[in-house]
Length: 479
Image (cartoon, rainbow, N blue to C red; front, side, top):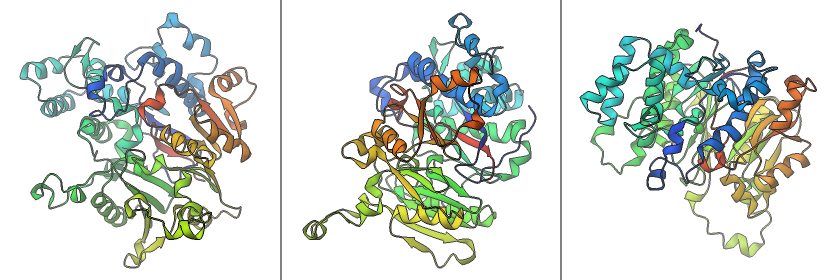
């Protein structure tokens, strides 16, 4: 595969290339006793999450990013007698797009190299404490079979060798492209260690990224890391891509959360400034709660002047503007239940800027970074109505992926949030209907504006991650 251009300088520029991973058989092996260890709140039905939900996402992405792979083929692709081979990386009928790029496909390609295979087999077997016999057997598998084993933990869907990595569908967390650099993650949870290892090998060894190898950033451990007690979380260096947002060519947001540590933010800021990747970095510290996990679970960008967010962190709520004097006096919110924001500029690091509320930061980004003259607007999870606001935030109402300016993808179950989008002037359309319109030439992706594309989500939402989580953009047009 020839190397491809990589550059992301916004959250809403037209998406041209991204990394994804379709739900694999490992998801179907998550059992209740291990669900939380593997970072799942529930177990999912594999066939439903793949065929009735995620496959629609793949088809939608191909229509927007690589239509030649899918145009005129919907009936063939969906025909059960073809065994859904279009979606299987090991099949000769796999879609093989260099715009909608499947990670398992890339992994199989680098495993054709005997030296890479030897190193990666040894590394995985060390992490998973495999026997020498298993290690020897893995070395002799076909590349596509070995790639599947590394991800699912199972050989030919029968023999389980080690745990699956069911979170691999959340590709944003494994790394993030910032302009023409790639910042690799350092997962907070042991369940994601193998994901990080596999992705390091792909980024450093696949021809797709050949000219960017010097632009790959790996965060070092803090000097005290190996001498601190296990419960010294503040000094751990953990970082996940859901806590990174590239809001303009010069400005990056870094979340400090349940999954990304303050020490990681500190090292990332120093590194990004030293390498001249950006000129401004805002640290958004959110409560360390499973409800939020990453900053992209409480807000994402829809347009240059529009954001979707959880109303609990709005200016009105934080300042108690609707409260009476007694309520204000009795406000007992703890500091660890609020957001704090500090912004650093490379040219004047010693004089950081503080923002009182999340809305203040987002307004500043829209007006000063993106030069918006229109009023900055906010759409709130659950239409800002309790209990729908928190219920729908839990099912990723704020975790939307912008395919282009004003065209976003999200879940069908968040009814009140969808109503808020309609009230804000958006159209909503179910993905199944939209695909049929594309197929019949009734409309093209270029024609779509101010639209919320509604995706089926009965099982996907159980995995606790939206489409912002399930994408790692590699290339966006500049806004």
